[in-house]
Image (cartoon, rainbow, N blue to C red):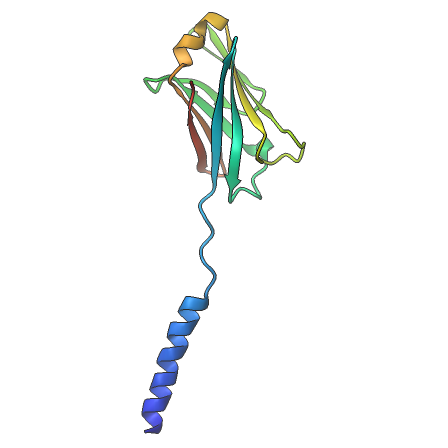
Length: 140
């Protein structure tokens, strides 16, 4: 009888400890909302940023691809990359200057010449940090 009680107590302990463990952290993600084109600038605004508290915006890299997947930009905020005569600059606009991705911050893709905006319309803006892709957003 004592042996059954000890076994039952052990089983209950294992079951309770497993259910009392904290839930896993949500995957890191940044959700962007399209503001759209204004001349040569395409702006996306951060709606939510989940699991990225330790992610410094200054450490993030950005990738811009056209609708066919051709890369036009890969680099940090403020960098300019020339692909086929088109300059693409991506700039992170930190609304509250905390160097973190938070609601209201913006990512601006600038294209020069302005006539080349049609090349990127329908493309993708990606945000990466620490070996993870944090966001993939349609350029529209």
